[in-house]
Image (cartoon, rainbow, N blue to C red; front, side, top):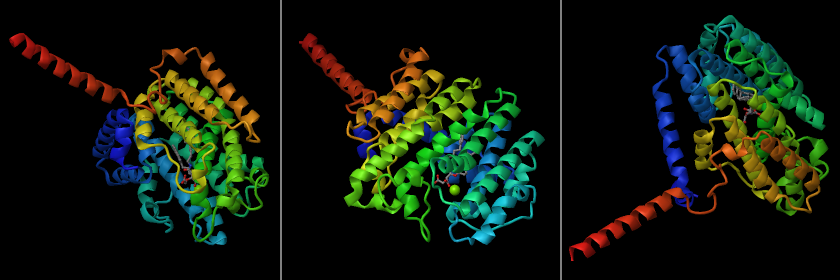
Length: 413
Ligand code: D61
Ligand code: MG
């Protein structure tokens, strides 16, 4: 659907979309003038528009550390993801990456498009890294070391069991959660969160990506990449690629629902992590991606389109999430709404229906027990399938003008 069509169907997307556009424009104007910091921030905008927006609202000193943390790990991930690099070249780079960040002369060319630019100019990221406070540098180095070693381990190893799946996701995303918690603590704004909760924040996001990106990853050239654990998909098909063929649609959707049910396990830890945050901008930075994740799971669940193309949240809905996520009450509200949407999509004949429903009920219970549900402006699902407030306001205005006009003409007669 074109953007105009989307707005006619969801008129109350218009205001948050415009607001988001202005915020993005404002953020791009704020790019620092020193060349290395300028490069880092403009790279951040090119590589991840959504993370760039949430990072932008952190205070300068923490923002710089998070920006470099992001770019260092994105560069490491570019090495991991480049399927054209031979294993014997790739593994040593992944393992030594945490040392390369201190070396302004280190350089390795790989990746495509904006990732290629990031790798080509990596010395500018190193230069900025070396200007960070020592405690930030140490946290970034430690996570880069552990992530690189974990990625190297999985270069030669497939994700077989659910434990392997959790272990892989720990390396590539759970560790980001641990590192961020360290940076938040180092900034003096937050208490240090428990590792298991920080890990869950990353697992929930990574598992959502892995579910949503099935088709893109399986079709990867020259070699497909597979992250769905055999222990789950082997219950439904003989080979992971069989899920994409039309004749297996029923099994494919059951497998997808099994994967979504697995991801939902982390939702309650995420709610606990977010409810412990005290700083407003750190809170928003953490909460926005989490709400997008549960929203993405809700649209992917029981949806065969995941095996046919890209299933993504509407841009307008994303803009609404960014606009309306201010407090923990908004998070409970969004999790409650998306859990309800998921609940309405569960088919009684799905092999995991009971398990899925019990996870959803648990999430709804946590949200209800917060005592904050009725304090919210009702959220996402509101007016999702009708005409929104904008249209109603326009109609009311139109009618009042007509009424005023007709009564004015009546009085003059
Ligand atoms: C609070 C706020 C943000 C959080 C968090 C807690 C906990 C964890 C994360 C963000 C990380 C979530 C990663 C989810 C997206 N997955 C990927 O990008 C995959 O690559 C993983 C390795 C590189 C991680 C780089 C990263 C990502 C987000 C960050 C960050 C670093 C630093 C600070 C803030 C956020 C994925 O990438 C390709 C793709 O998704 O298409 C992959 O290769 O599997
Ligand atoms: Mg990767």
